[in-house]
Image (cartoon, rainbow, N blue to C red):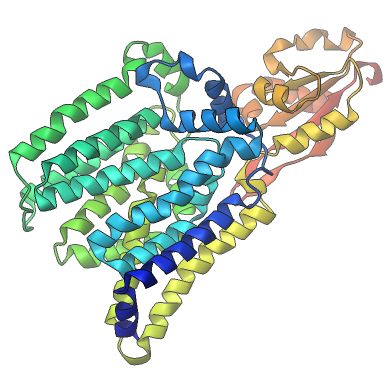
Length: 465
C-alpha cells in the first residue's frame, strides 16, 4: 500500500491533480459565507486605514492593506469585497507553500501538509477576515524556508530573498520579528548540538543575515521608536494571562496537531534532522515569546498564528512516517490517525459556520434589530463608533463616554445601548448603569467554547421610568 502511494506520487501529474483538488476544496471553504459574517473591531480598523492608505509613511506600509484597497476601490466596500484579498492569499498559500515543503520532506508529506492547511480552522478564520494575517504567515513561512535552504545549499542569494520576504512580513506586523528568535536559535543549535553542520553554515552567510535583519527591525519599529506613546497607548497594558494565551493557542492549532507534532519532533530530532530542528523551534518559540510578553504588556494568541505552518508540517511528517512504518494491516491504524487530523478540524469548521457566527461578534445582527425598532430622535450608543456608523441607517452612533449618565433621566430622548465585551472591560461602571437602568431588548451573544462574544441590546427610555 505505502509503496503504491509513493509510486503514484512520484508522478508529477498525479501530484498536481491532488494539489489542485485540495486547493479547490480550500477555496470552497474560504468563500463559503465570506460576506455573511459581521465586521468586527479590527476589520473596521482595516477599512479606516484603507481609506487613508496614502497617508502612511514608508515604514508603516502593508501589502495586505494595498490589496484590500485595490479590491474595495474596484468592487466597492462590503464584507465580501473587504475580505476577498485575504481569502485569495489564504487559498494561494496552499500551492505556494507546497513546493518548498516538498523540497524539504518529499511529496507525500507536502500533500498532507496542504490538506491540513486547507482544513485548518485557524487559517480558515483569518482567510475570512479583512486583516493582514494570511499575508503575514505566507511571507513569514517562505522566509523561514529560504533561510533553511540558504544554509543547506550554501546559496547566499537565497538569504537576500529571505530578508526581502521577512521585511514584508515585519511591515505587516512587527511581531514577525519572532522569526529572528527562531533563526538565531537554529544557528545556535547548529553550533552547540552534536548535529552535522550544513555546508552553508559559515560566517559569511550569518553576517548577510545579521545586519539587514537589524535594519529591518529598526524600520519596522520606527513608528514606535519615534513615538513611544503610541506603543504605550496600544500595548502598554496587560490584558491576558499566560494560561489564557496557551489555552487559546492550543484551541486554534488543535490538540491532535499539537500531539502528533510533538511526537514527530521528538522522533526526528533523535535522528538529528536539521529540518525538524528548524520547524520545532518555529513551532514553539513564538508561543514562548508571546506568553512572556503577556505578563508585561498587551498580547493575544493570534500573534502565534505564524507558528501554525510549522505545526502542520510536523504533523504531516509524523503522519506519513506512521504510514511508512506500518507493516501488514497496521496501515489502517495510521489511517485512523489521519482521519482524526481531518475530522477534528472539519468538526470545528461546521461549528464555525453553523453555530458560532464565524467566531466573531454579531454586530450586524445587533444593529439590524436597532434599525428595526428605533424611532426618530433615538440615540445609539456603542463601544466602537465606526462600527455603528457603518451598520446604522442614516444615523450616527455615539461612544459610551459621550453621555453624562447623571442627566439622562431629565432628557426626552430614548437611548439604545449595544453592549459587547469591551464595555465591561474598559468601562465597568457604565455597564452597571446600563444593566440597572436599561431594558434588555435582545441577546445576540455568540459562544465559542470557553469564550463568549457578548452582544446585547438595551433600551433606556426616561419617560417610562
